[in-house]
Image (cartoon, rainbow, N blue to C red):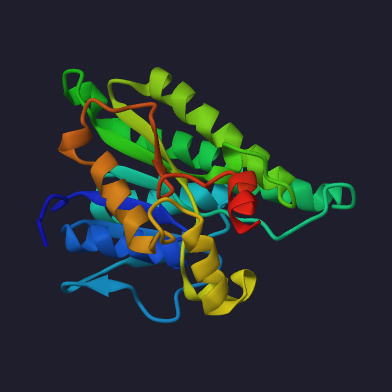
Length: 261
């Protein structure tokens, strides 16, 4: 435990998921008071070094519920220093057949909810602004995806939403400096137990990993480490940036196929 976040408050949306838990644990180890939210509570409380995350049940696609999460954090701890917009995702879908309702839900979760919650967090972070000269009062980190930076067949709405989130990151950073820094992670392929079936088991994980320059998929802790860097003093002059956490990028498929011939 470094204590870098002692007496500071962090909100992690989707904090009970695979990435969310790793991010939450990292900030708990750093001494933060962490509030997590989601539609379902974690199976077990998330705790590190004697500190336990506070869970608030909320569907952040609804603005009233995301505001409730921010209000709970402020009520419990009196301040908000960091928002990690981590909640997101999409089922596989065929673009020609997906219903408008499902498309709307995906856009709300992956783009509109982070935008609205960022606005709500900004208001909470800057309540101290009138008492201080221009200075950093908070950080927002948006968890985006390689799907927003390259074609995303099979999840077109998700890719479009994440591309929008990357654009919004730069716009909000310009609007909200110097009070709040806003950055994004472009997260590549992540290894976790829930992905075993999706990738065809352990052998599938290994095949995908061998196509990446670093020869492994990301661990959730790799994403958590990147979050910690972007919210640290070492990144104090970084805002509106997108940090790629993808192991060097996906090798073009034609090169891989050529090697197999």
